[in-house]
Length: 147
Image (cartoon, rainbow, N blue to C red; front, side, top):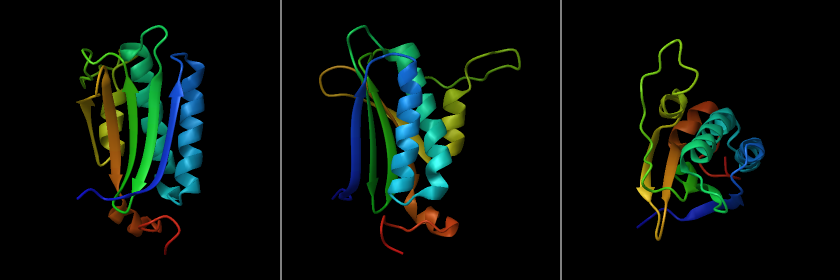
């Protein structure tokens, strides 16, 4: 049986560069507001990387990019969905000269896990999550609002 949602936020963004900043700031506010202060910086970077990838590689004109944050008793999760299911994320080794290509490496380093799955209908969802039991070591509560 899946862990019940304690918190959830869902916003659809137009595929415009300015919305990367809006989504990143919203994710930080939510992580802090839900009581996960020590995860806020990681959530910020991961959200920025995932929505940037969706914008660069998964967006289509007139189709929205969805950002969903959830918290259960066990996990804090960021999901970014886009309409291009045929364009799967692929981590790669970036050289010192490469301007791009480090985003998924950062996501893998900052999150406890990440992956991708097809959306019902069309597109894909790329997700990253953190196990909240580990947050106890950082002073975060296991569950929002509980110590």
